[in-house]
Structure formats: structure tokens, C-alpha cells
Length: 103
Image (cartoon, rainbow, N blue to C red; front, side):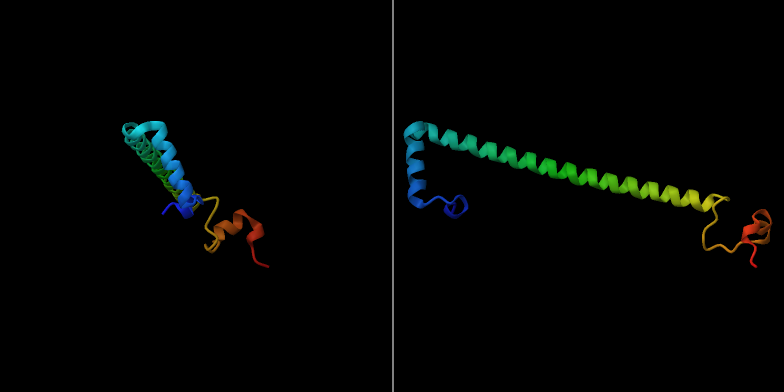
């Protein structure tokens, strides 16, 4: 199962298990493995928390960008000095700015 993932042969895995059994004993080995499992679970939970925070930050940044874009578009549309480009100039605007007068 893990032999391909860790690039460890079955004989080497058996040797590692035997060494762990000799070092920690038959009573200490289950506690060690349980602690190892808890540590892995905590690492996974921390990883998920980091992913969640990154996604949340990206979402908040996108919402802030959309809000600012909306505010800018609203300000441009309501500003009398900056008419929308698709508006046709009126005579009053031609009198104020003679460069708009067609030849």
C-alpha cells in the first residue's frame, strides 16, 4: 500500500516495524501510533483551515472589487462633467465647449 508512495520495499517496511517494536515495546507502540495519528489529523485540520481562510480572503477581495467597481460606475454616470460616451452632445454643451461643434 505505502511501498509505492514512500519508495520503501516490503522488507524495509518490515525492518522498520520490527525496530519500532523493539524501541517502544508492545505496550508503547499503540500509544505512539495513536499520537502519530492525532498529529496527522491536526495537520490535516490546519491545512483545511488555511485553505478556508485563503478562499474566504479571495471571496472578500472579489466582493470589495465588485463594490468599488459599482461605486465608480455609479459616480461616472451621475457626474455632469463626465457624460457617458454614448450620450449625444446637446446644443448647450456645444456652446460651453466650442471644440464639440461639427465643421
